[in-house]
Amino acid sequence: MPHAAHSAHAPAAVHAEGIVKRFGPTVALDGVRLTVAPGESHALVGRNGAGKSTLVSVLTGLHKPDAGSVTFDGEPAPAFGDTAAWQSKVACVYQKSMVVPDLTVAENLFLNRFDAGSRFISWRQLRRRAEELLAGYGVSVDPMARAKDLAVEQRQFVEIARALSFGARLIILDEPTAQLDARGIQRLFAKLRELQSQGVAFLFISHHLQEVYELCTTVTVYRDARHVVTAPVAELTKDDLVAAMTGDSISGTSQWHAPVGPVRTEEPVLRTEGLTLEGEFEPLDLEVRPGEVLGLAGAAASGNTALGEILVGMRKASGGRITVRGREVKPGSVPHALDAGIGYIPEDRHRQGLVVDRSVAENATLTVTDQLGPWGTVLPSRTREFAQSMIASLDIKTQGPEQPVSGLSGGNQQKVVVARALARRPSALVALRPTAGVDVKSKDALLGVVRRVADEGSAAVIISDELDDLRVCDRVLALFHGRVVATFGSGWTDRELVAAMEGVGEQE
Ligand SMILES: Nc1ncnc2c1ncn2[C@@H]1O[C@H](COP(=O)(O)OP(=O)(O)OP(=O)(O)O)[C@@H](O)[C@H]1O
Image (cartoon, rainbow, N blue to C red; front, side, top):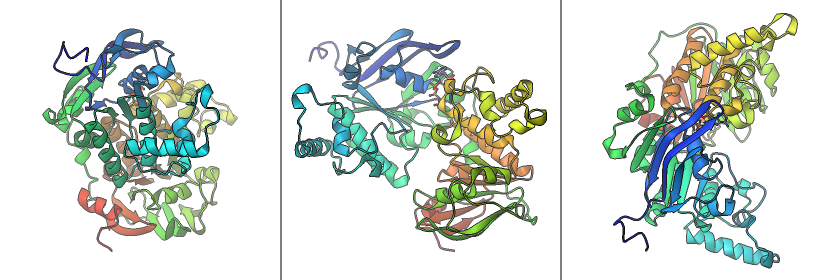
């Protein structure tokens, strides 16, 4: 090998040096570096807006840096715009799928890959080639299955196999576990370790520091567009890592539990009676009192998400009813749920949350325009003022209320979604996995806001499988296969709650 003469080590899978990237007045990357060794699993962590996604765009050829250099395997990165050449070096598996849902796995694997000479490729041939390719990477997925019918981690395997088949030896995973349950995560990690042993390198971006410790050997921290530290994971405690991310030393907050308050006797704000959705969850009577945060814990297919979607009017129950402060809510209608006082923090900001080309201020006030001026007029000053208070209380990193939401980092966009839900001062706040994609420190701030909404007399429901989300709850119901299998006060241990969500908890 040409490089071997110079170094005992193989050249880095990727080496980036002095990378600068500006968006107008924003410096998204300020001379950062990153080196990932072959076969290494390297974590990149940082708070929302630190520059992680921007670096990924630079490393995958989507953004041209204003300064700096990138090499793959010791060779200069391909020319900007030469997509095929970039594909042979690196690929990123995003939270949002890049596969075409209606096509089969085989078709997705070979999409845009037939040269003119192979126009008449037969289905049988396509299938055989797909089978070989998948088997080559130890991926057991039916090549004839439609992509949309795959489990999330199977879809990720297909995307990884596709990238490797182009020759890439570096795979970037951007929050890959966001939509996976505990078993899915273990299957994904097992596959990543197997590929790593074959020399494939991974750059792993996650706000779940626990996963960083489980999977990665090295970690790099960025803060405010700058490189802060690169170190073996084993040499940094979780507190060190958080301190590097935030620039100060905070600790212990994630272990915080809601204090045990007095038993509340007021009439419930939110109540369900016999609420059910056939095939999703069994009839359920819930009562959430003023000042209470109720957690609905459950893994994928537990029914907790369907229940949340019914509470906020996105789906219609097959039986039962919902009342807010004694008033029945018309089923299956988001506007009616809003009118009844139900505020909603959705899970998927890309689809349900925002009008991305509008400003932070406009998005934050979308549900309250009737309160921002007399007779239906919207006073810009009032809108700005309201947005500014939200930016401060949720710590939204933005140039100001006028900045389009499209220019915010993912986690900061999620905070705008939260601001919008809070704007109406809802009687009952329903949050679906509210902190997905939000950094550790903002997570605490955001959950603190939910807690505060309740403390001021509203009811709140958090639907999640994230233990940190559930820690702020006064009471947690664990759902498994559509049934409540356990109820916890605020003193549960991680083990017992996880066990209940996995269906092995003690029955009540
Ligand atoms: N297209 C864009 N236009 C303007 N500003 C942008 C654009 N993309 C990113 N930025 C800004 O660059 C900075 C870095 O954003 P980036 O998305 O890289 O952060 P991140 O670390 O990935 O955050 P998150 O954890 O929230 O995803 C932020 O201040 C963001 O507002």
